[in-house]
Amino acid sequence: MMRRNFELLHLCDRRLKGVSDHYHNYYEVYFLNSGADVEYQIEGVSYTLRPGDILIINCFDVHKSIINVNSLYDRVVFWIDPQYLRSLGSKETNLCRCFENTVLRSRNLIRLEKEALYTVKSTLGKLEKAYFGENFGNDLLIESHIREIMIMLNRACLDIKEERIESDICVNKIVESALRLITENLSADLSLDRLSNELFVSKYHLSREFKKNVGYTIHQYITLKRLLMAEELLLFNDVSVTEVCTRCGFRDYSNFIRTFTKYYGMPPGQFSNTSGRYTGTVRVNDSAYDEHAVEIG
Image (cartoon, rainbow, N blue to C red; front, side, top):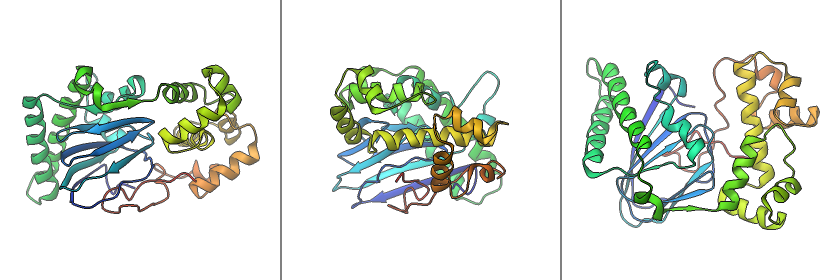
């Protein structure tokens, strides 16, 4: 779990293995300063990154990095609580928009023009200095720099030039369609037979391609998304556990209780009485990078 509303890391490595599939319940922004042959997979979409590239990762997006660098791998990562980021905006300006739009357009990569990239990197450097410094007023500078960076990233997302990034994005159309179908029908029957029939593909081919591109089996992924939906309902809505079970697509109440308890460490009735958001089971593949990740078994 983040120790506060915002955390920043600047990491440099020469030998590093990738981070396995995981998710978290806060936004992530990833800036690649240097490093060749870096690939990121987010919700079944693969991105081949270049120095200067920026990734925006929404809450609960399943993602992982694939690192094959022999040179210096230099990146800055920051995590930010959605409610905190929203509070930094205004009635007219929703700073969370760029993350929310990834759901609609299934794209997470920002590749800026030279001048815009210089401005973002300059502000990021100021943010990093304030974050790790102890000078008077640094807390206000941090908020100011976060606002400035997020305004620039949102503007970039509204004006993305697909031709600048198209060659470095690999999308499996079958998997992309399956992910959309799952997301839009979590409360309904999502059997493998139904998915394969609606997508006009054999269930064996669908299962193989889904696991290859997303990192989880279809069953694991559906269970994950239903549990995340249940978490939101329990924490932020006045609904009974029985209703949550039904609305999240679990057909068997006992199975819902058992599965929820397995992942969250407590039954849903107890979970709904906890304060704050669930922080997940700590998984340390690369403790210097993302020690807050949750693995789905």
